[in-house]
Image (cartoon, rainbow, N blue to C red; front, side, top):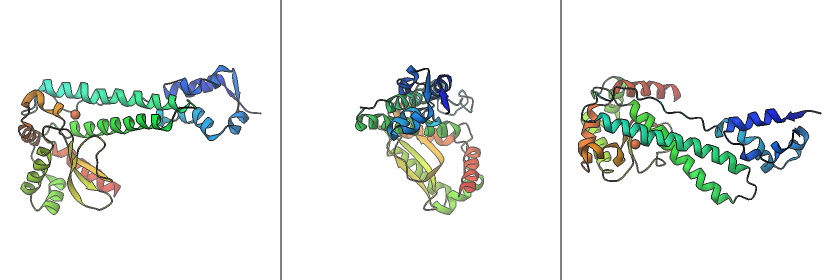
Length: 255
Ligand SMILES: [Fe+2]
């Protein structure tokens, strides 16, 4: 008869970053594998799922991919604060959320709506981490559109100028509030659009982001106060079109 050693179970817990879900099982020296097989689905989830990578809580922040002293019209102080506090905070929160989910799976009497609250946080924090990483990665350039990205934009918007006017208008519509403006290729419809996103969870289904602009006030208030449009102008001067072109290539591979 196969037996699951306590050491192995503890290792599973360590991967999850939380031991709470296996509280019952790890109290014994050894757990019978047949006992696990006889468990209800919920009980198995409390033992097996928390060890899964989905609950690892091991995300770490990506370093800024450009020199923060070199941006035009966006200060080093603002960028560092944004990266450290808002993006860095989202990474830490996502790790905490994943670990809490793992632990909560082991709470037999936990109401689903309480679990749902933390699942919502998982979505919020994931959106924040992913969009911030796209945002920082598409900064640090000279703002001059080029290559296949420019060709693609012309195909769908007629001209760069027409696309930029709509992108900026979409961004300015979020001024004073929060959200993201995202030039996305829609993998389902096969169309290119500037999408409006009110928050980290508000993305077009199947939208593949090519250019991401953070319109939360924390992205500009330190430099521009409430003058969001000036920040949008500054952002356009710093777009890294090499990165946008890299995404266009990557997107073509995924189509
Ligand atoms: Fe942000």
